[in-house]
Length: 211
Image 1: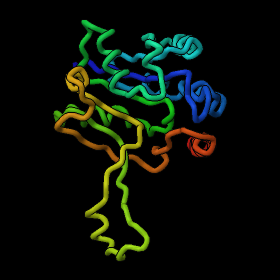
Image 2 (image 1 turned 180 degrees about the vertical axis):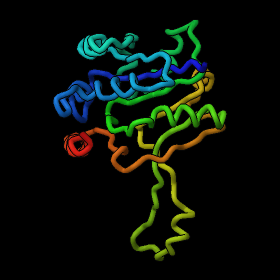
Image 3 (image 1 turned 120 degrees about the vertical axis):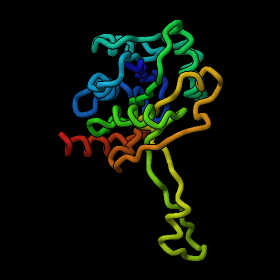
Image 4 (image 1 turned 135 degrees about the vertical axis):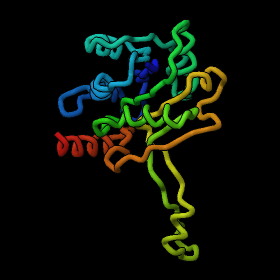
């Protein structure tokens, strides 16, 4: 059986929407939606929350989740995802997972089975990384109008921040993408990544419909 590490990284210093990770979304702290989804995964064998924030740590522990304390210097606006994951893997040594699954708290809308579908595809295709997202068809007003089939050929894949799967070795080697990578396409409602009040309102409306 593959060893799969699930990770949710949360910090207390969110600027766009202060304290958003513990703000109530339909009566439940935002980060708890992701915690509950991670626990339902059949394939995640170990799940941790990385944070420097005392209140978020206590909330995770309340939901029986392992917490890895994050250094305050890695909880800044300029801190990259790679830095946090690299530090986390170093702290967990000698534990060595076969895959790292990043589940971001500001993306609370995931259809049932999405997380495990991503993990299965990652291992089936034997790739370095996998992300969820959608195609963006870039058309510029004022430029010659293109045929629909030509636009499709030029579309760009955009990751939506919902689920990431990484091979640990690439993280430890200073990368986060690798040479071989794959995608899983998600529905529009799963693209919500909460950064501001409108995003929060939209997530609530979508989740009200789903519930």
